[in-house]
Image (cartoon, rainbow, N blue to C red):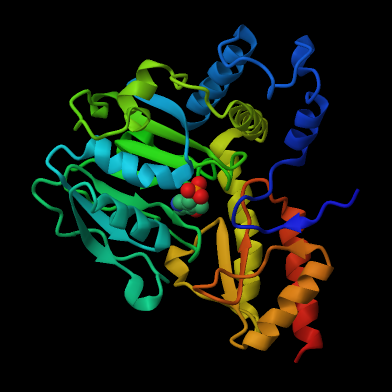
Length: 360
Ligand SMILES: *Cc1c(COP(=O)(O)O)cnc(C)c1O
């Protein structure tokens, strides 16, 4: 069996030990005689799985007791609607547009109230994070929305926006668990799990309790009310049981790796190897401003479409897969999530060096 080095932006690489454990437990989960896929979500054995997953996530992120953790379905995109439906009390929210995911969230929010785009980096293909120190935050904004790590463009916030006292909501789909987070800086954090945590379809919402409302408009679907999900401990209906189980295994793995500070050190080390190479290469160039570089997603180009295509083709043949850039940026993108070992980045850089030497 040959595993490739998988640089996919999502769904993406998972820790090999987790996949092996899932394989070992596939037919008989801990003596239950069943696969996790087959068991009742109301059973004791499954209840232990979801409770333990929540506990481990709480430990890792040091989630305060006044925040709820919800395991939901519909991916991150479903939250683009759920957030305005649940949090817009005045019917107003401010969005900072740093890429396609933030833009999609903004466009969705417009269906439910007045969404304002208060800053954007679209003028330069989202290659930077706008200055967010003194934005025109709306007086009556119910929240300020950001996408914390921009998966497609490879930028990330190094400093949070000054929300002037308004609640901050963040999409952390592509950098969750990659570094420590001060949960109290946010009213709501959500992430689709398929970038850094588990199988696509599961989305996890961490929400401050006082933001969970009971007085929502009638049109809000029962399933999309945070109140429904919080009251039922994420078991209002059948949750994505197997996906949550894999998330739980990944949380244990991150703990074994030393938690979020250790994860950050590991990710900084990996990213540095790649960025240092890009900074001195004559052929390959990063596409975003240095101060705003993501630790997770690294887009780069040669400046020549044919050469880019040749690189992707040869890299794929050599076992470095899913390096083709997003269609809106072109070139290449290496996603180096938590589960990517240092060796994968070192070998990729060696491959890039060789490619550069051979294609001068
Ligand atoms: C991948 C991604 C999404 C979309 O996730 P889905 O689960 O496919 O809806 C949203 N936001 C960010 C930042 C992402 O990286």
